[in-house]
Length: 344
View: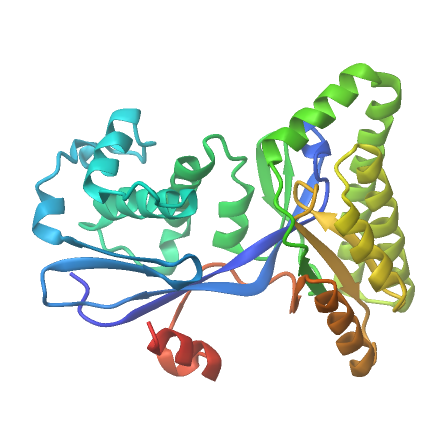
């Protein structure tokens, strides 16, 4: 059993290039962000297991004895399995959701209960367990998304940058960490609807849309090549190439019908400050990324961030290529992180 406080973190991720084209067999490049989610595991002697997710307002607790009495026969299976519909229904009974419970809370609690009931006997937290962590994270993705690609959990587990194509995930060769702005337009969208819209457009205009998807694939491959060169000897002209690729990909994504007025506004605001942006992910709102070249003056970065927040967006400055899932000592964490965890 856990005998002391354990701190674990994992990075977020963004797609650099390949959104939507990846659904049609093309290459996508995904990178880990140095914006991390922290997990604090702390032992208690009250016979309860608690879950506190302050970002989405979840604070729940269950009797450990009651959880251990549940039928958890799937724990005895040799490999990691996905939860069956019957098990999900049983977990819903254990969770006892109120009628007005938000969907995000339901999914987060169900994923937690499934993972807890599956691994609470194992306590395997070593560097050699990355593959195990990745497999369990994928199953949590299945609870939440149904049929995920596996990119999110892979990037968060191993960090760095990954290439994804037709179900095959492989790490990129050592790449140079890039500084970016991540901007959330706070415009909600349906990934499922956007993917379906691109497919409909492809069926309707195959000779137009298929070359766009092929061009996005070429952008991903060119970005991969340039990043490989930059890892050995970065040069200013290579950042100019990355900016051109960002602009071209953004125009292609608009042509596929997955742009949005908020994303156009994001690109216009950053372009006014000499910076280049594109959507990341499904589009239709959501988030965008902005490349920050080396040597950019600090006042210009701050002015860009203020302009974006002035549009009602959330904006974070961060880097890509961050380490994957990590175990921390409390002393190794930055002050703000320690303070936030201490307030839980």
